[in-house]
Image 1 (cartoon, rainbow, N blue to C red):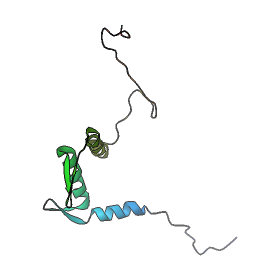
Image 2 (image 1 turned 45 degrees about the horizontal axis):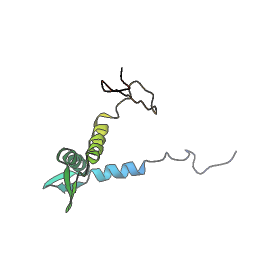
Image 3 (image 1 turned 180 degrees about the vertical axis):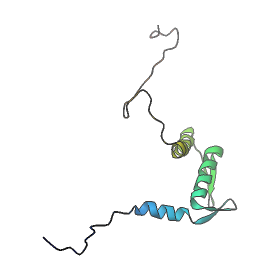
Image 4 (image 1 turned 180 degrees about the horizontal axis):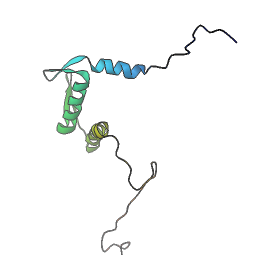
Length: 109
């Protein structure tokens, strides 16, 4: 049998990007005159964007351009707070389409 210079084997992979993001999230930033940790600042700015439709990043003001932009921000917050909503009545990946005809239409009963 061979001899190894690494008897414990390869160390487990670190989640380098996650670790770097966590470290950066603990740094302090000034947002709207308040000193906040990065992760708190991000949370504050995302809520501000979703509620008011605009947010200032540095010297640049970002505004919601469409209902879809607002929906994307609100959905991002919701999914990160409550998690993804479970699918009801369908398997993941299935597409469910409901059609309801107006009374008096040729396809309605």
